[in-house]
Structures are given as structure tokens and as C-alpha cells.
Image 1 (cartoon, rainbow, N blue to C red):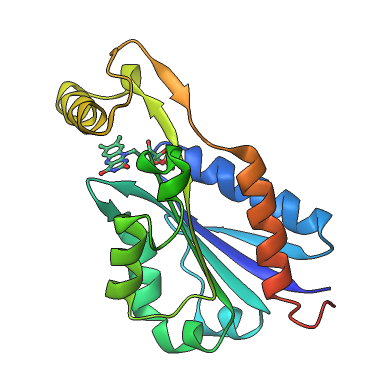
Image 2 (tube, rainbow, N blue to C red):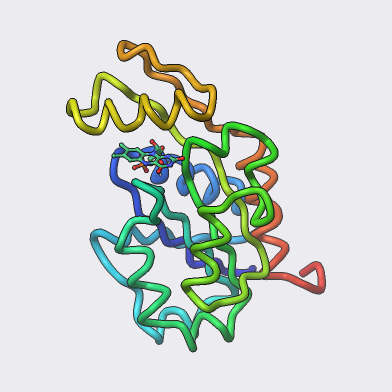
Length: 183
Ligand SMILES: Cc1cc2nc3c(=O)[nH]c(=O)nc-3n(C[C@H](O)[C@H](O)[C@H](O)COP(=O)(O)O)c2cc1C
């Protein structure tokens, strides 16, 4: 059974939910996933070497993937370069289908370039907009981003933009990464 190390960095919980759904999808595709919350633990070289593929999912805040995900890629670049690798960016602009590929998503493109890795799979997934949760500064900034990109600005709104069908399809692609010969 192919084994996937599924690492994630989440601030408000949506990337964690996406990672958990990916783990279930990988299991449904005949693989096994070990989840690693990067804020709690950073996998070491040995754990990376022992897995068939690695997926790293990171929430975007103010244009950048969360630091714990950047740290993992920087610390273990050589070990990760030797494995099938998926990079998943969770952000709000990915609510538009054209912004879910490296070509369409500047966040994803920049993250790949800065990590100096060549992921076999890279996708952006839409996250959650949760105005009531944000402090005034974050709320203002997200409203500004939404105004620029034509999204909702009503500060009472909570909207889950995540396309769970995309996440399920992504899980199958990650499972296939770990079994390039089909098992
Ligand atoms: C302070 C803050 C900054 C954010 N900055 C961006 C951004 O620059 N671009 C974007 O598309 N989404 C941005 N988002 C949206 C998050 O990426 C989205 O809410 C995501 O679901 C967060 O994942 P998490 O719940 O795992 O932390 C931001 C959200 C917050 C709260």
C-alpha cells in the first residue's frame, strides 16, 4: 500500500480540514496517509525517506504560505527533491477555477519558485472566508482583497469556498503520485 506523508500548516482550521479530507480520499484510492500538523511537529529526514510521496498544504496569509510550511521545504529540500511531491496552496483567490494551477495562481508560482523545488503536482484550493472571526485590521485587509477581486465584502459573512470535489480529485492524484505504475 503506497504511503503518503501529508503535512499541513493551518491558522484558522480550513487547511487542516482539507488535509483531513485528502487523507480520507487517499485511503479511498487504496493508499495510506500520515497527517503531520506542522505547527505541532516537523517530520525529519528519516520519516520523509521512509514514505512513498509527500504532500504539503499551506494556508496563505498576506500573500505568503504559513512559515511552518516554508520551514519544512527549506529544511528538507534535498530529501523532498528525491520524492514525488505535491504542493497545495489554500487561499481565497482559488475560489475562481482559473486560479487553481501554478500558471493561474501567483501565490503557488511564487511558493514553488522560492522553495526551489519541482513538485510533481501543484494546486491551489479555495479556503474559508470568515469575517466575524477576524480582528478589525485583518477584516479590513480581506475586504480590500475581496473588493479588488470581486468577492463578498459584507463583514457578517462566513463563506466556505472550498470545492470538495476538487479536493477529492486531488486526493486521487496524490495517491497516484505514490504509485506511478498503478500499484
Ligand atoms: C490575515 C489573513 C490574511 C489572508 N491573506 C490572504 C491573501 O493574501 N490571499 C488570499 O487569497 N487569501 C488570504 N487569506 C485567506 C486564507 O488563505 C483563507 O482564509 C484560508 O482558508 C486560511 O486557511 P486556514 O483556515 O487553514 O488558516 C487570508 C486570511 C487571513 C485571515
